[in-house]
Length: 223
Length: 216
Image 1: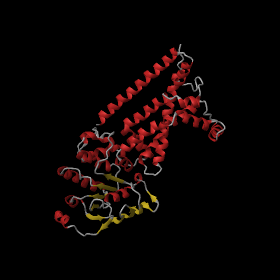
Image 2: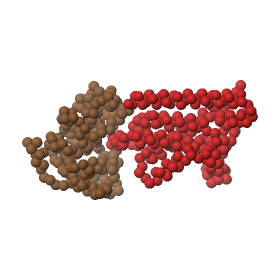
Image 3: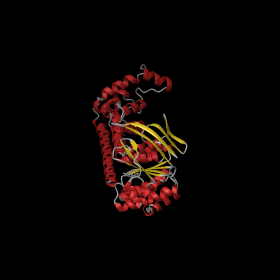
Image 4: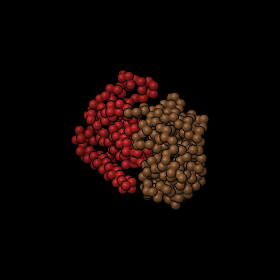
């Protein structure tokens, strides 16, 4: 019987990462879409860095930052007894950095496409930022919202380099499907590697096809 | 009584407006495009920063660094581009501002769109959209109604209809209304007073002969 833990761990990691990254990215994407600050290009560049950098570079820096003898690592351990190195929550933080552009960019371009007057009409109607966000902004950028959530989820499921460097391969804690497949191939266990790979391929295809189908429906209904 | 004394640096010239408007008055603002009319309305709404002072019926909306956010100023704003929420039905657009079904029904009745309350904005014509926006602007029972060329995109028949509805609601709610407009017939029909803006300032012109002629 094949052990499904690495697969469920992959999807759990993707779900948790997507949730927290959404919360963090919402104000950031909104700010980027509205600001005329001279800092904007620099923040956009920082946001986009994970697309360009090799995962090993990101993983290396995160590894150094999370280490117990680094200022951040020491602080987190002291204040909240939180260990990020070789733990599930370390993977979550690393994945949030790694997937940041995939969440922020679609949200930002969605927000940029919203008519400014529509947002102002909500403010004039007495509504604050969060009400405007939930009831006006997000419902009117559904395709971008869906793209942001699903691509972040899929991108996290597909992660390998960063996860391997920051998380290692602890069964049930940090050994996600991609890492498990790598190890199986190293052990020349092609049979199990095939099963994991096929499952990943199948689920990923279904998720993406679902997104494109939904997106088409949104576009048809909003035109 | 609304006392306005605001300044704002703009590109080539500064906006500098001193203006007093009586409670319940209907004031038209006219002038060439780019003279700062829209900016003035946006400053009054709190959508644009400015220096100076805005006091409405004794309530300070702007004084020095203190500026009430748009949410706390009792205003209705009608834009040329409707700015309805496309994800909400007509009735939901109104109830979004205030959860008052009775008022929403009454306002939709005034603008004759009660049968369309379950429609989405994209199913309506331009004139219908603007009438929904007008009804929505009154949902918060605003003290100040700001109209930024709201009828410019509509055909003459629809304009007449909307003018009547604006007039009726202005009276019924006792709002102080400021309307930017270029249409002299419209100004003559609705406004009790006209001021003209040029390069960010209000220029005194006295009575406009054409407006006077239409009024007579």
